[in-house]
Image (cartoon, rainbow, N blue to C red; front, side):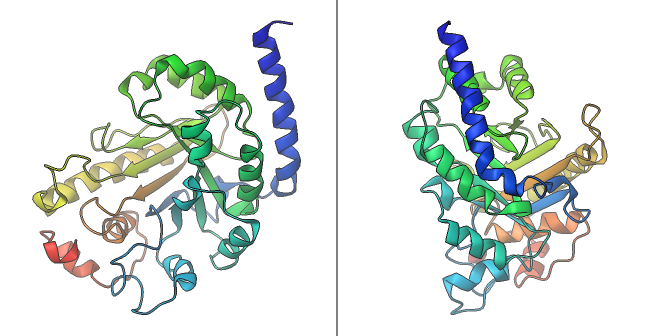
Length: 311
């Protein structure tokens, strides 16, 4: 048996093992059918300093913040899972305090993506997927964020790793950080493995979103350049950007996948340095999709320009 066929056989064996952890949730993981929802908008985390008085009453306990957050937004990108696998108890609590149509996008632990660089990630991969399955139907896409140094020379590791993932039970997407990995070949690889491709405003023009495997996953991030602070960007620029993102998402989700005959879904997550506190531009985007939002400070934000007092 060749080394390539050995890797393939090992990958299929691993998929069968992981499936045993998530089989109990298989009939529930239908994020595309979330009570008619197809656009999920939120922030990258829900416990951010500075949100007291805007989203949270002052003095609100950390443990109570997710429940309050979920009254305004219908999704969140969980950043803490990047630093360690959440316990089953923690995941059960997240599930309990959020409404039925709420969705969690989990970042895959950095131990898998950055330390192991996708090679031989067990047992942490099994542990993480078992934890993620505890979210049942509230589990959204799992974000595989590759490190900035991950380049085309490591595509074999990426291909082998994707074979390990239980794509029948969970949805996954990859964020690449190098322009060379946004090639047709990489797109074809993700398509074959049924994996989504993340869009960000740092690599795409406003309105240019990737639609891969019935999924749009958009991350709106602040500039990584110290010379481009958010305070220098005008409110008019933000609203123009937001309109283009919203239009492209609306167009993408209005279409049905020609291959799978299912409605496409979109997830949009705003960082806390993208045009002010992340909850404000996220709330503005929600209003573009006709969602009712009541958020202290939103009216002032909508009047623009963005003031330093809100940053």
